Image 1 (cartoon, rainbow, N blue to C red):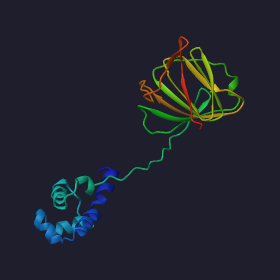
Image 2 (image 1 turned 60 degrees about the vertical axis):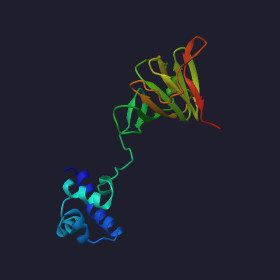
Image 3 (image 1 turned 30 degrees about the vertical axis):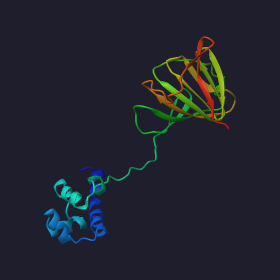
Image 4 (image 1 turned 90 degrees about the horizontal axis):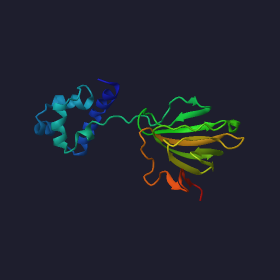
Length: 206
């Protein structure tokens, strides 16, 4: 048994007692309906007897509830606490736990990095960027744009691209990246403008 399973089973007794008391029935009455002895029911409710499927199924029928209402796994801590890492001069703060599928990051580009020469690269995927603070320079194919706080852009990462600070200050941004190329927003995507692709940018400002 895992710790999570043990924690879930530990809550079964109090939940069974609550279900019975809410219905105003006695242990003897539940015993008559389910065929489970009074002593076993009492031990289940007090936690002295481990719950099994053979015991819980007739109890679920007697109380007219689903098994999920009797056995509920504890809710995991929702906070994400992965370690940050540095790549290409930027600090990445992962915002989700899973190593596959859509990835969410907060990125911090340090002050002074605007002196770097753009080095566009391409790879499989689709990326969405939202600037929290500062000025972000985005180079996508032949397009060179600057995004400020509250603005967003998204693009197919198979198009050569690069982004970095557009001024002397640091830049903070959010990034959503789909390694399999899934689009973050179904209405978004590279669009043809003047014979070439450009990121579709939006402003979050009112």
